[in-house]
Image (cartoon, rainbow, N blue to C red; front, side):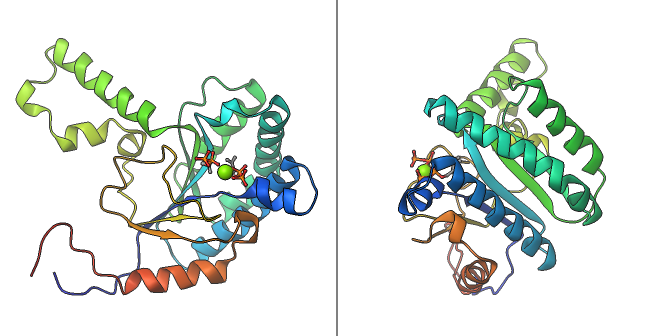
Length: 239
Ligand code: IPE
Ligand code: IPE
Ligand code: MG
């Protein structure tokens, strides 16, 4: 495959480092999440401006429930604040918002706002902004496996029909017709996936930066995209 200089279609981000950013300033973790929310707002705006098709952010994992009640409710309080203050402008900017993860279990104040957000923006044709919330890749893969088993048992699917495509269609991303990310970025210097999109990232390029998420700026994203465009993606093949 020739060296391609192609702009990415889908970027995924693990927004990490809010807690350390706040601790460095002698502030509470929730203060860090508030700063993280502002950084996310700027990044979403920028992704729309540069014409990115899909942006997926990891906002809350299935493991993040282990955190203190104070931090968890602080994060969801910020999510409510974000939707209340940003929904109109996201819609005006033609952004479509999706949620990856099971949010049916969330309190009504959150659930209702998420449903409203999805419904209002569902026909928008600009940036597709996916928020991974109560998301875990293992839970998602299990959900797909169960759905295949159910269809097989009910004779809706033959054994020979079980392939990668059928499997992918049953993931949150597949249900929403979201392609695999071209590039995944993790901030804060941690080099791991932490249960994020493990099926979908099989051939994604990866970028890790020491910048803590609240300090992550559109300029740094542009640099990472430039670097990505000069990488050679081989997908196992050779010229
Ligand atoms: C990422 O920042 C945001 C969430 C996980 C919700 P962290 O809260 O994980 O920040 P650190 O890793 O403790 O610095
Ligand atoms: C991953 O970050 C989850 C999100 C960014 C939402 P964590 O901070 O929860 O991951 P670990 O615990 O460092 O692996
Ligand atoms: Mg973290």
